[in-house]
Image 1 (cartoon, rainbow, N blue to C red):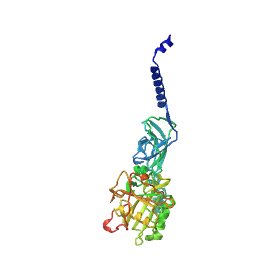
Image 2: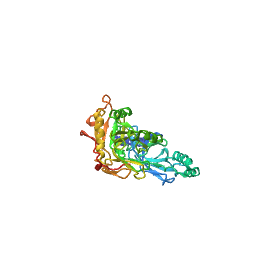
Image 3: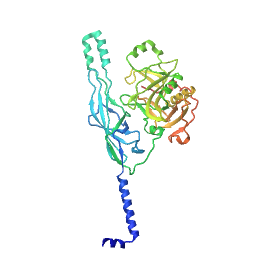
Image 4: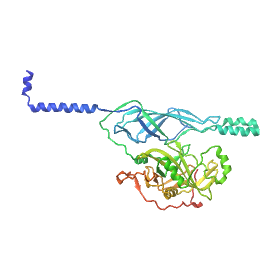
Length: 424
């Protein structure tokens, strides 16, 4: 009976019903396809604000910024710029016996591109500098003069611990995570990470206490050995690190010490990788071109990218803001930027030079000591790769935020007393 009725149904209706069932099955199949994000997938993050042991409490929230797209199978699953969440897990204030403070924190979660939240796995422990050696030296010196007073120095406290803004940490996604393919945008990793780097390059460096200081005004593209060789050819010297032995070194060399240490500044949560100086032969201690350089986590065609902060010391000040010695700088920091570009070009170290722009321009700012400097906000990129290995990019490969320029012939910045500011 049923088959007899079925024969009466027109063939085209049966065909339509068959096609609709096929389309419905395909849609269900497509909707059920999932992309698996493997557990342990790395996520590059930077701290959004300073956190200090002097004020932080256990459980306080911490925000981090994703600074590189997270890609899986050619799809972006976590876009750069996404905010990840963390929290403080332990706080110890500075203590007697010269012991410094301590802050520990962990990463908690981050949102995927579709809004789903996934867990993250990462921890960090940051300790403040201790004063134990200084305390011991003071006790010994006091004991020689008046022994009963020596125990007073046991009350010496260490430094607070500050997790400085821009501190970098790599977290891992907690466990395997499934994500529907629907709505995902395919993306491919560019061999040049310059554009991505400039989107998230901090505009300024920080003191260990988290105060903003000098602006970043130089970017270098170079292998470590090429970077060091370029500055050596131009006559620059690496400066000493701060340590107790330096005091004896300074007493021996006096004002002829070309390797006078620089103050330590922080970027990405660490002090500079290189400190270079080009002293004035007539006033080595008081006047010098100087530069701090940090390695970034970005590359261009596999070559590391470095960020630098350059200023020109023109005089020494005593007891500024509690410090024993401070250098005054020329507030025209652009002149120092261009001086370094011309200086390295003269020794045939530069194969390409361009001005690039960050997303947070600096026109007027203050040093960590509170004195003003000014800039046109441009950052000079210098490619220091040897000519034989330098990559020559065509117009299509040039970053949209980069504008090529020809540097003017630079001379040493004006160091007259009437054109200086103050730095720490």
